Length: 180
Ligand code: 5GP
Ligand code: MG
Image (cartoon, rainbow, N blue to C red):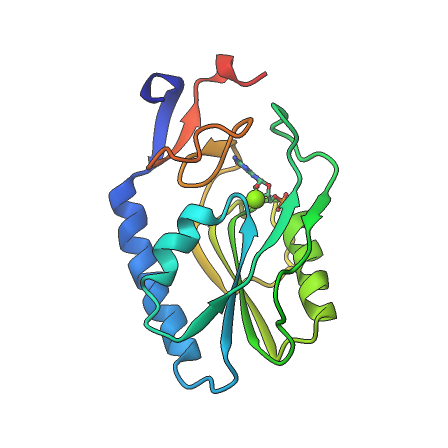
């Protein structure tokens, strides 16, 4: 994979450090929640972030999942949004923390917010590892952001190109000739 990467934007060490501080921020917010916390990762991009983040949250929690897809195959521009699987598990009256890899146009999170609201949670908050501030709509509320990044296509730490590179440990930009 190294030979496919043109530039590392955020190293694994920087990610690990930020995930620890995010974990501390989030733990403070939910410290005295008595209603029960459910973490809701948006598959598939959130899987690595989820695994690291929840181990920084010393809180009792359940995990439910929701699976959406907006990129298809080798496209790097968002395609048609598809709900591959709705919210698993019962989140009614629970404190729900949605976890996603990246906030780009906001279409994905808007859809997820709708699905979650429809299920009647006690509260809903959102954590994203990355945000592209130049594109993210101002009216879409996210509560916790790991890093703001420039508007370019990134891979690694859960983020894919044509379903590859999710296991790349850093956040990186691919060599342009690889993007079709
Ligand atoms: P949005 O719906 O906010 O435009 O995009 C959110 C989803 O699109 C993310 O969950 C992610 O799956 C995908 N996405 C957006 N930007 C990027 C990017 O730079 N790289 C990769 N690999 N996926 C992205
Ligand atoms: Mg995603």
